[in-house]
Image 1 (cartoon, rainbow, N blue to C red):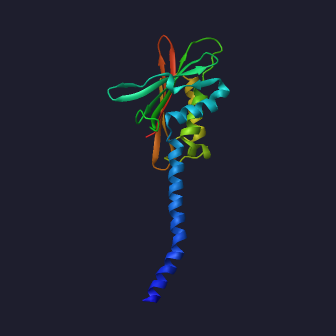
Image 2: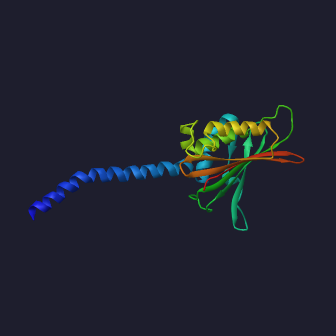
Image 3: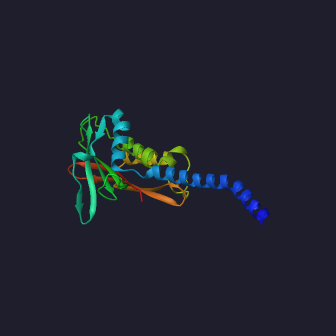
Length: 203
């Protein structure tokens, strides 16, 4: 009886560090994956204002109210641009609370057609990849998805081609995680003014 009890204690002593390590690794892996694309609007604002200041851009998510039509909750936030560019960010959160996560995000720039106008779409898309798809940014020439999915560098190349071209729409998938692809869409609306947009579906 004492021998069986002693054997159990020894077994638990040997296995306990392994169990703790395995559990801890799983938790850390989950947190790191969640943090790579799970962002609240407040986190978005802080990251955008910190990183996009170099391009003279900033946002204030509290400057506008939520729009909720047909249960389609969203905010359309104007981007303040020092060069006068007309840019906005539309995001769809999971709710209207501070800790709600962004489910879908899109940036739009209305072109004035003025000579020397700066198109900021590439800088904005780089921001989106760096902050919402951080695992993709670690290996910029690799994809964890099918061969026709875009790597980080390929995605930026497609962005530049879209800006320089005249396509109405460009869609492709990125795979920052195996078996978890996310859709990227570039869109060009042509009318009295041309509007270029990039959107990223995060769920």
